[in-house]
Length: 472
Ligand SMILES: Cc1cc2nc3c(=O)[nH]c(=O)nc-3n(C[C@H](O)[C@H](O)[C@H](O)COP(=O)(O)OP(=O)(O)OC[C@H]3O[C@@H](n4cnc5c(N)ncnc54)[C@H](O)[C@@H]3O)c2cc1C
Image 1 (cartoon, rainbow, N blue to C red):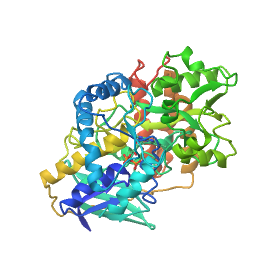
Image 2: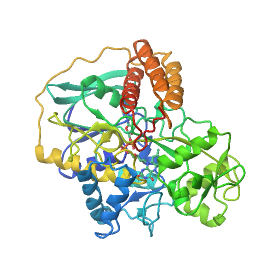
Image 3: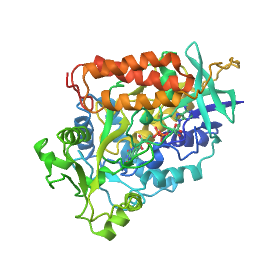
């Protein structure tokens, strides 16, 4: 089996890159862990940021840089914002239209976030893209290795239907998303566990800014599933309040912007307030019931399932891990430096656009803009690999005891590598990870290698910056 391009993942960055490759006749294979919709793209709620016009561009850039503590790569942010101007037309020519009107989200100075199906933006975009997609698909397949020799990627190793095998290609795009499953509380799809970043560690592919992990401030965590329910930023953007058990809007004691401060500030404030013994809630009682039901149908239905009578009743919330700013370092064309035919797009990549913290709704935009760039670069380079066969990695892939260690890791990451970090806690997490790695089968080991990178980067950055907050 040999393809022009293999794409690891089935999220927006994967399917959007595939679109441009398929249009040029490249035969493309998408490989994904479970079903195509088991990805973060499917769960995105709030929307896609698009600069309103040329005049708004400098403000979008400024908002993005401010949220990222000016640690962003300015050139990448400029490309992001400039290219966003053409996106509405590009999507509409492809047949996709957003709901009318734009909304405002936290840390945006003006409304510029497009949504679809109310708060079902990700699901609507993903469903639309897959209806049009012409790629080959291998689902229920875990990628456990990338075949690399002399800085050339020859393909991947997968586990599918109880078999291990290699698939070969002229180009490989990594679109495998973030790392949610490494944390006890997270908003991510259950497939998002950071294994491919672990392969990067093994293969000497550079990971950058791995300490930059974003915690979303408003998550309903009282659910039986490991994936917790995100309560979109748009709720606060449109007027929801964060209160404690005394109905005190305590956020103003931490930042004058209150609910509209950036995510790291709001998450930290809630976390600190909880540490003082308070309970924290999202108050949505100012919304009319019909409006709420139509504008936020996913949230409305899920919370009603949990017997929370929204919008009248306040929603108990906590911060939870949400988004990985760090990842595989790429250039402005999504290519991994030093490799001839290896690319990374979407959340797994580090383009530099998010800096030390991501501005709300900039990540779907990044998937669109830099997903297309990867495809264009592959088309331009027309790289061909010589035919070569690789031995299959013979490590055991799964062990019964892995689950126990993965759960301890999730707890360690939440307690010691979470919203507020200190040297002692980080070292405790590092010791646990180092001692556990030799006990694990390959797939769990890859997750642990990724976790180790996060901890090491968090230890190395001794001063707080953006989402990375060091107490000592
Ligand atoms: C609840 C929620 C709401 C969000 N809301 C917004 C929003 O409103 N606006 C916004 O801009 N961003 C939002 N985000 C962030 C955004 O959705 C993601 O950053 C973006 O969708 C990532 O897309 P992706 O293509 O990089 O990865 P994903 O969509 O996460 O896809 C990753 C794919 O890789 C596959 N994969 C992973 N590991 C392996 C492996 N070992 N083998 C095979 N396949 C593998 C997965 O199965 C999955 O198909 C939200 C995220 C969440 C979780």
